[in-house]
Amino acid sequence: MFRFKQFTIHQNRAAMKVCTDSCVLGAYAELGTGGRLLDIGTGTGLLALMAAQRNPTARIDAVEVDPAAFGQAVENVNDSPFSDQVRVIQSRIQTFSSEPYDRILCNPPFYTNHLRSPDQSVNRALHNDELPFEELIASVVRLLKPEAQFWVLLPPFEMQRLAVIAEKAGLHPYQQLEVRHNDLKPVFRTVAGFGFNRFSPPKSEQLSIFNPDGKLYTESFRQLLQPFYLNF
Image (cartoon, rainbow, N blue to C red; front, top):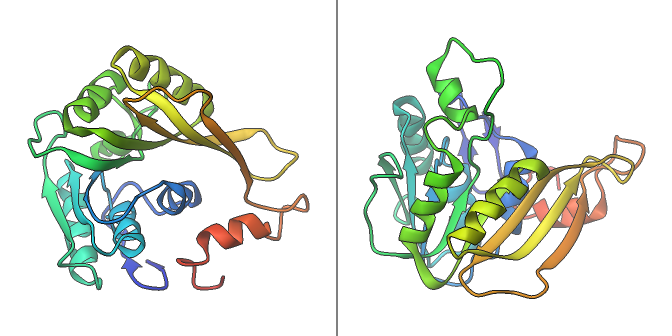
């Protein structure tokens, strides 16, 4: 269980647990005001609930294919103050149909050649066999309004791969945040926003989670997550 300031995430039945980089995506992505938002592969419902807290007039759809994670997300949403704002839907995004969205968020599975788990739910959450980047981008292009944005979290190498696929489909990088454990470590995650308009050059920012001692959070990280983390 992970308690935030305005909601609680139960995660005992979901393969994808709450992690720091997912929280960074949920806190950093530009969500606008109002509108319709989509969380692809919501897992426990974390990103959908963070989006609801940040944009209280948005209508949010959270799509999840795994039955156990779907059930857990439904419970987390129903137990939150945002149950009237967030709708959890069990579906493959490739076959999901809806009116287009103003923002789409996704923390997709990205492992391709790693050792498999005997737990199919874990494989579904971590490996991209069921949601290859090509199918993810095709779904985003189909479900995104012309002036809207798609926000995604990936390791740097996988983000480069996805950006090539997105560019061929007409989605261009808008903004990115490179995330490090601390200033002495390499970038381990990238948060990126894409849109149909070409942005030259895309805005780029840096975020270190810890100070160089590896123990204390940086002030930038604390400010970003302050609306959510209990101890900030």
